Amino acid sequence: MRILLAIAATLTLSSLPARSAPPDNPDPALAPWFKSLKQPGTGAECCSISDCRPVEMRQDSEGYEVKIDQQWHLSAAFWLRVPANRILREHSNPTGKGILCFTPEAGILCFVPPPES
Image 1: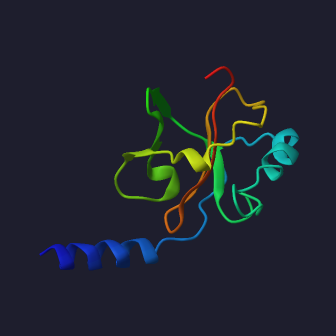
Image 2: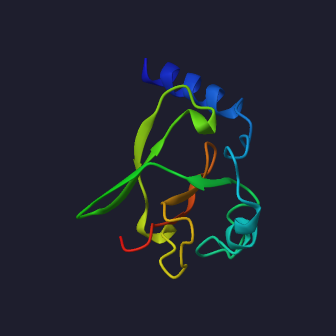
């Protein structure tokens, strides 16, 4: 049964588009800041291969969790722990919100915490 579930999940995720629609009302003045976000370890632009957008998040003693929901064209929302090596702490964050760069295929590429978190 687990094998069937794994196959179904893989087929569902593989049929999803690599990128979803841009966020509602994007601010063009923030485009250079979003382009400056680089993947830890690779230096690749986070937003060139994923969607980067404000995200519902929560913080606890272990770090951050982000809510992955229908904005990424997934059928069900879920909370996902942000790996410590994906958190970009050295970036100022002009949005005032947690920013997540994510694809269903690759998962979390970058996360920028909101100011003062």
